[in-house]
Length: 153
Image (cartoon, rainbow, N blue to C red; front, side):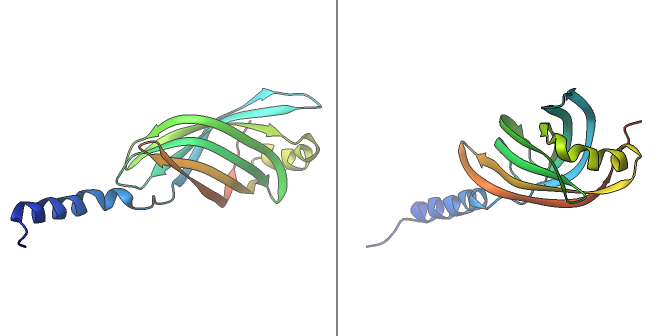
C-alpha cells in the first residue's frame, strides 16, 4: 500500500507545529518588586502587599492559576502567601504579580530593623505555583534565594 504525499505533508506539519507547544516551560525570571505597602497592621495579624516583576523567557504565553509561597528574610520566617489568580502571561515579556503576604508577627521584629535601615538582606521564597497553557495546568516548585535591599524610608 502506498501512502500519499499529502499524508506525509500533514504528518510533518503536525510534528513541526505541535512539538514546540509540548515543551516544558522555562522557569520564570525574577526581576524586581515595587509598591510595597502595609495593608493591615495588628498584634494578631498583619499583611503586606507588593507587586513582584517577573520575566517569561518562553516563546509561548502562559496562564498563572495559583501560588502557595513561604517567605524568609535572613533565614527567619516572614510570612505566607496563598492566592488564586487568572493572570495571562505574554511570551517573552515582563509581567506583574500582585502578592499579599500574611505576616508572622513573632518573627517580624527580627526582620524589621535591618530591613527598614536599608541593609541588604537574603530573601528566600519557597513553595509552588500552578502554571499552564490552554487550560492545562501543572504545579511547579519555587525555590528562589537572592540579596535584596528594601528602602522603606
